[in-house]
Length: 194
Image 1: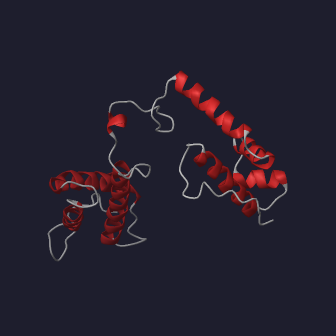
Image 2: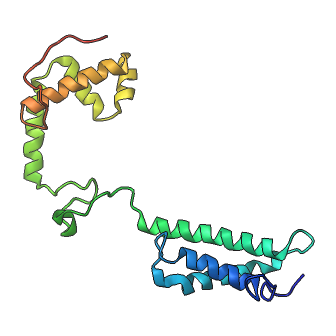
Image 3: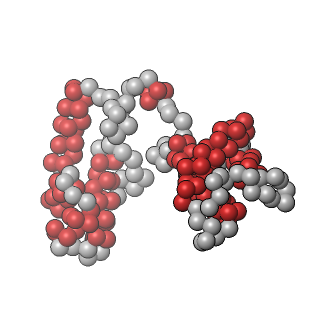
């Protein structure tokens, strides 16, 4: 086994490892989240990776150039993945609002902070709307506080589509009371598709 990955001749360079690492570093610099001036840093990481893994090379199993290329390519993939993970936030697709920047959100759901009095008022208003609902919609509202629509449908023994229809009626009632929005909140037909 050669003592070092360096010094193996290549048609375009005196050392295949140096040439291949430099080529890959130049390809990565300025792309995949790397700054254009990071070629030297990328090259150093690739070289270190190659040196750390060189002891596992067995010339009976393959060529030196293939081993070097595979190790470097694998490290390039790792570098790109780790760099892209640092730059992506799948939760946020737009800039933070001023409220978020100044810490005025509750930190749990990204909702504006509300005082205890506002919460109490909202609770009273919601209780008033719920009290005026037909029994089936009041029961649905109670179930949806604790379970998903599908779980509620199973619990009630009705189709999910039937419960979806009831949920749209429930939303219209809340919209009519001034909570949320619904274009058709004036129409409350009691027909269901069961």
